[in-house]
Image (cartoon, rainbow, N blue to C red; front, top):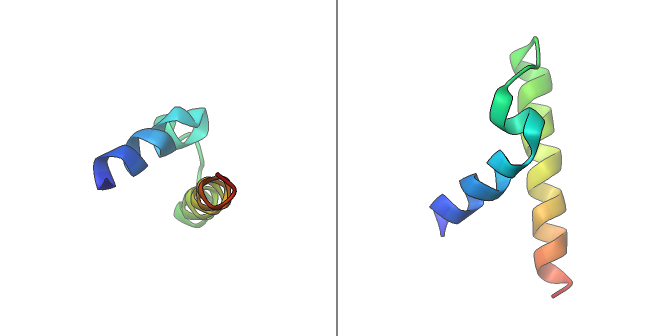
Length: 44
């Protein structure tokens, strides 16, 4: 299940390529993407 979660995070291009300049902005993007996946999971 953890591997599936990381795979879904990698499907977001910015998460997979790490183009963000700061650690804070990269981690914030991961948080937003995780919340989006969680909400999508709840709605199914």
